[in-house]
Image (cartoon, rainbow, N blue to C red):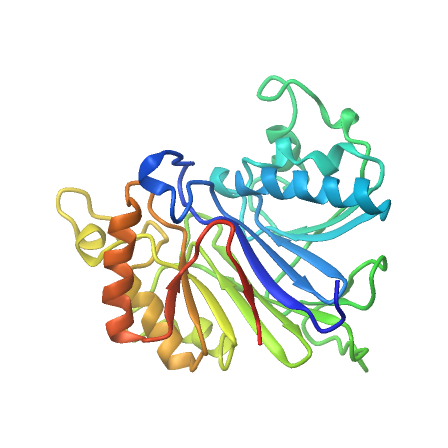
Length: 306
């Protein structure tokens, strides 16, 4: 990996459940998984079914080079479409892997218990005793900053009010914010910065009248904003099914945030499983009338953050 490299790759862009088939060939049918590569660091956001293919790629790289696997994994929340790829993520079963996993603090049970349940009998044939990787699980909260100083070193976590001090020039920083408008424990937003460039991940979020001011401030001046846009305005308002309060946005909500925050590029994601490629392109055309620099997140596509 080049020292100045800063890329984002979409391995899964669908919300709800996977939707493979001829109607989703162009934009993809796997559920949410995003890979950010910044210098030597690999950061994985969410563990939908897109994670499975990424895991195979990571193992191929290991076998080709002999280099151990190190990754920082960020969970926005623990709904099924953001964790269902984790049991099939091959690096968790290989001793060459070291995975630092950060996720939300849950109300009713621990994050570890939730993830263990998804990977254990009776819902999965193998238990966590089969996982040969090194795994470290931590909570993150609003105002936290993670500093990734160098390849192979564990992330350094600083809570709100704690000064990380002088950050090495080649370090990656990850800032955390919490949105309260996704049932029932809310959602984590992540801002990843490297060499003066910023990417903000804001999936599974629902807009407010006048725009989500908290998210707008968090995304201010970002080079790329990845934002939920699951619904058309007609679907959101109903009838027959009213989706207000379900924790997802329309394309207009996403463009309102992008415009107010002054971001350079907006990528719409968490595509509705009922939306085929043609429906998504109609949504894109509408969104571009409001915010010209809008694209659709597309499975397999890599964007260089310049």
